[in-house]
Length: 95
Length: 169
Image (cartoon, rainbow over all chains, first blue to last red):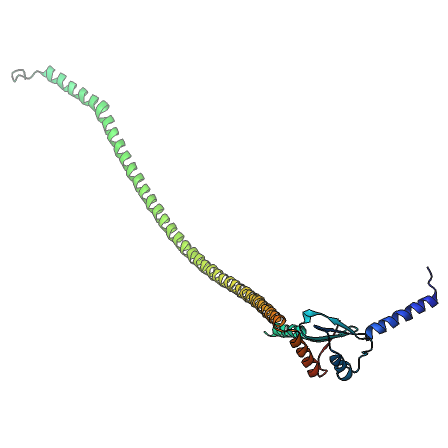
């Protein structure tokens, strides 16, 4: 079966665009709702290189406190659960 | 002679009788008896000679036996010494082998013990870490109310210097 080249090109562009969007999309996970002030601090001072216009805020009680920022495939873990996980890794590394 | 009371005829007859008796005795009694005696003597001599020969033969045989025994004893001593030496060598080899085997077993057991110890240590460590983290996690979850969680979050955001690792999925 032969695929129309224009259709193929359009599909490719569409997928690339979606991937680009997905890659730049910021997801912030926190234990409780973040106040507007906290959101402002995040987008204003700390992570200026991220695109905060389409940021998605999610709630996950299991992280206890703090936040996790996901940008595409990258994760910035600033949660207490993450700290505990890091502590556990450190303890495992100690002989 | 008649006056003397000697009868000539009787005397002659007696003499003839005596001669006849003598001849008969000599021929039929003395000769076989002498022959028998000689034969007996000869037999006795033969027996003595045979006995002597037997004695000599026995002595020679005993001597040969004695020599054979001595030779056998010497050979036995040599063989015994060789066997003893060989047995000593085998014993030494066996002891060395047994020592090497024992050392090998000891090393293996030591290694196994070390591995088991390490495994146990890792298991205990794993359980301690998991239990400790579970306790900390549960304590934090129970002790932190909403305002405390917000404060913690605020502090974390405030103190963030942009140096944390970014994990790639």
